[in-house]
Length: 168
Image (cartoon, rainbow, N blue to C red; front, side, top):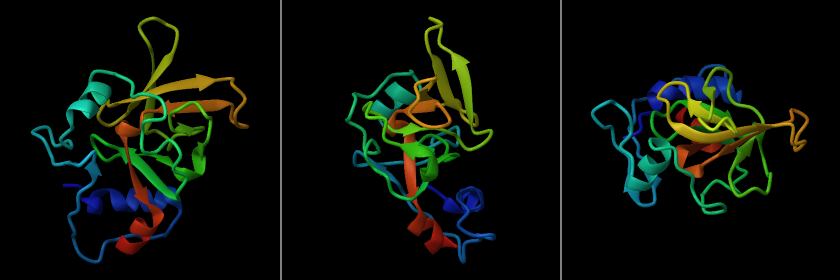
């Protein structure tokens, strides 16, 4: 189960939604992905579905336009589906029309960049757990930052701003 108590202060600080975000009482909730309830595995990470494991652990790619966050432009924070680390805010999301969620900036210190073995692309991973997120591309001109994090929806979970506010 996802415990927002541990990540809520970071999400609130990052999203700028409140100066102090302490839950009133500890609450446990779950996030669903393809009707699969996530629960902690032996390593303390969320249990992954077979498709999540294919992408997050084995560095696969979901089909373009198949992910649940491709067109979603709601206000909130995107967290790692494996470890719940906040990775991106909705303020940095944009529609690149590439078939995957696109962000022009990660939350500082939360995403690491690694060259693909073929040297053609740069992989992005969650700093905390090493989950494969997708790839980053520079110089395409989509935004003023000239950066596009092309992320698999299945590697993320979205926490709406309204849910964050309700927990504070």
